[in-house]
Image (cartoon, rainbow, N blue to C red; front, side, top):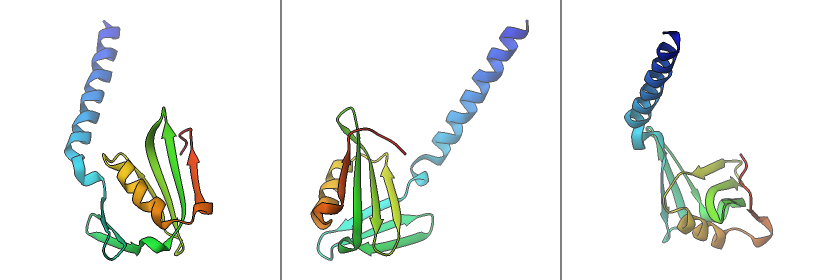
Length: 114
């Protein structure tokens, strides 16, 4: 009798976790906008906005897992650190960042780490 009760408890907790995930939805992620004309990146998240020029990128790290780009890590000259993951167009973003970063400061990791 106790085993089904424990199973039901974990099942309900899992459903509650999924509910919280769906409730947050897209608002949990910041929005990135890259303006190619002014060479500026705009990041908006929950009424906070940050922008920086693409020329301000100091270091770029691309993290791959099974041949797929999983994460982009950016360090800027103004000591801003960004971790970008979970977006659909990571390859296009990485391509833009690659063009504006000095080649000696680009690192491609073939294994994913945090």
